Length: 250
Figure 1 (cartoon, helix red, strand yellow):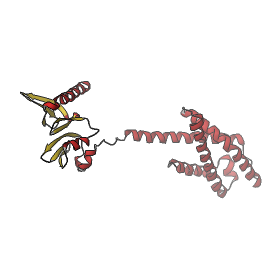
Figure 2 (spheres, rainbow, N blue to C red):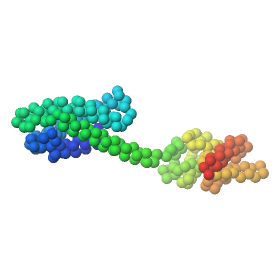
Figure 3 (cartoon, rainbow, N blue to C red):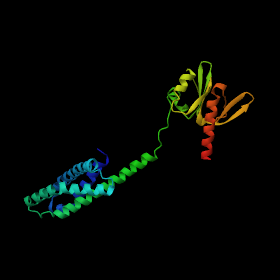
């Protein structure tokens, strides 16, 4: 059950007990109102839930105004007659003034519209909060091997002896793993192998440098990663893609 439902039930029950619509304030004792209104509001909520199910699954109305109006009408249709009959019976039994059916129907209709407006407002607040909440950052499987304070955007991987040095924007860590296996665990992060000992993330590239017989990528942390002839085409392709993205955002 949504948290708002018991709150509405309690608030509307208290309102009915204190204000006494349908002549219940003048004609019913406090003890009678303490039973009458909580039961009435509970029945209204149950009927409203059933009506909302019919509207969503059968009528498939799209307009919020139409949904609220039809729901209110259905609640009046199913609630007003038995409510009127029960109230009339209690009035005669206790020699009290009889209720007026059309006033009862109008009050039920208006109350239902008010509840729909409250639910809509609360639902919008929740949706807005969800929309404004930051989505959890994507983390490749490789990050499961890193300390939590190292789990920042990935820059590059480099082989050192039997270790792979992992460079992120938060620092550097060394893992006892093969470079090929480490690259597999970067799945989801755009990047490419540029050397038998190096892999770079596309988002980390800021440029390149060329020297006779040598070509290297320049990364945002200032590192210059050598590119071997075997991987040069892939590196240049990724560099060109980076340049296009930079031009598009400038």
